[in-house]
Amino acid sequence: MTAEQPVALVRAIGRWSLVALVINSIIGSGVFGLPSVLAGLMGSASPYAVLLGAVGIGIIIACFAEVGSQFREPGGPYVYARESFGRFVGLEVGWLTWLVRLTASAANANLFVNYFAEFWPAASSPVPRIALLTAIIGLLAFVNYRGVRSGTTTSNVFTVAKLLPLLIFICLGLVFLARSSPPQPSEPASADWLKSVLLLVFAYGGFEAALMPMGEVKNPRRDTPFALFTALITVTIVYVLVQVVVVGTLTDPNSTNRPLATAAHVFIGSAGAALITIGALISVFGYISAAMLNVPRLTYAFAERGDFPKLFSLVHPKFKTPHVSIAVFALLVWGLAVAGSFQWNASISAAARLLTYGAVCAAVLKLRREKPDADAFRLPMGSGVAVLGILVSLFPVSAMGITELIVIVLTTAIAFSHWLFVRKAN
Image (cartoon, rainbow, N blue to C red; front, side):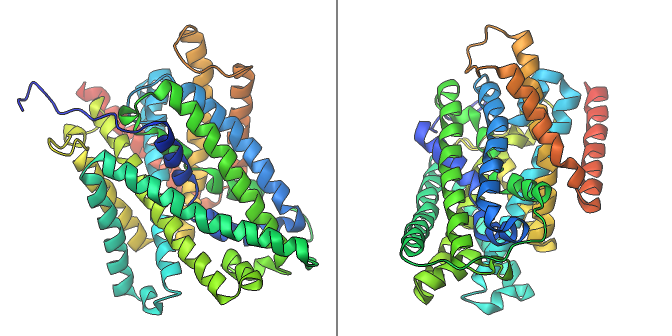
């Protein structure tokens, strides 16, 4: 292999593998922890909040479907913003997207350890905790280092594996509710819709990460909209029905931080609780496996456009993967997971992604004006949907805490400094 013939990524991700990747990128820790929090905020109305969250995120996903169908390069929101609004906005969105994905993956790694402690209490101790984090992140980095096909296969397997216990929980829970008189859940003094929406942004988010490896998708124009909408419908059905079962089964869902396991104990017994705990471990592990496939393609795209050191765009001559980007991502996730907690990482991830969503919705308007004849999926009333998507993205920003704001401001400042540097260098 000569220097004049750089190794290229291989297009190995088909339509249904992309669907699995999107589902795997969405369903992680949220479905196993948030139902109790939502029940505490909304009571018996919480399933409607979940459905409303799907409508809101569906507007944003529709914008991603149109914009994403126009690109065959890796990078996701960073590439969309850069091509639409220039290098400065691209770098700002790219750094925020990287922050979102790093903290979301670290949050899931933290939660994996928390759930694993149910079977091995010592896992919460410092040394075993670090060892377990090293093992799970290192294993998934190794799998994805060795090839996109092995990474895709891992994602497919974990998508099925995480959905199976959830489907069992839903089916048996609905049968239980149909045959018994469910208890009346405790109701909050007032429904907190705004906070519920922020939580649901984390629960439904992650789909954008599945669009980062577009350089390895066989037919991005055809498969991107199909994968996004199919995944949204699937995830919405699962989330709503899980919430219905939890609220209908438990008198006080907000009293437990393991709502699915507690509810399963009511209608299946201790074996059911163990099954759901195992399902949570599989779900979180699968989420991290999808991130390990997706997110390194962001820094690969950075480097490919001259916005990061060229080292990040190197492709392994044998495995055809961006191995340096994979290794760096794994190390950073490990560091955030070791240093932080689930709540700290998750709150930053949820807040930062709102800004990236708004930028992609705005890109719909810009690309429609500049490329009206582009070979792409077109939304009906797309301009109106894009404006609505911007409003949906900005609406929950007012509920951000001071920690999230500080981290986001710091990240945008780093991105600005980065832009000044590469601008002078070029």
